[in-house]
Image (cartoon, rainbow, N blue to C red; front, side):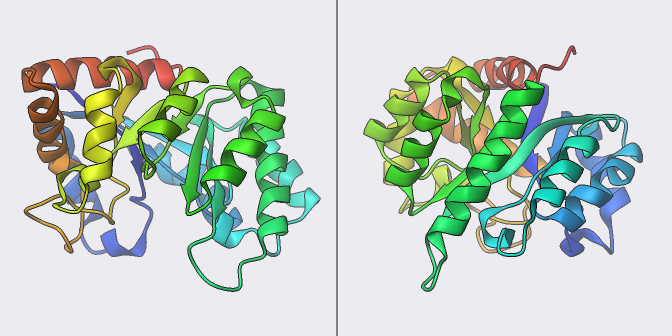
Length: 257
């Protein structure tokens, strides 16, 4: 069994007390690779040094839509430079998030497009965050010709129709703990619909722990519950889920195993 956690936040303070021991344990349990995802300029700047401590960990640089309010074009230039650091393999997580009231949607859209341009210019894959912003996300990705980029719809939260749009654009769908939730029917339907070779496993840890750990701190060892749920939904052996999603993740991030 080999597992690839395509989206994690081990730089989060939730892991400060036991990070090294935890990561050593999950690696020994079969988690062969982890991609730690930046969310802000601060985490992007720290990412190269953070991932150097772990042979099996890669990183991204990028600014989450919740953190773009004070972003500048100088920051965009800095993100470009940071992509040259060792083991920085993608731009993310970037996108749109309209979940909360008072959101500056135009500002989010501006910086989403600007970060997509980095990925296009440097031919890097992207990790897309889209929450309560289905139409605008798709419209921007179409206008930016994101079908010519490569990437994953992280923590995919829309229905089958939207899944079809992104699958047709060549994107992977990131599947995590939500697929195990009783109220995760929409994602279960997407998993049933989507080809296995377009799915990747992700934790989004420390968030979104699967059942039976819902509400607790998540980590990569819990991906076994996600894989088992996918296997059950598709009626296939769980070993097939591990093997295929692992290969998918290598292809997604352009990594030679």
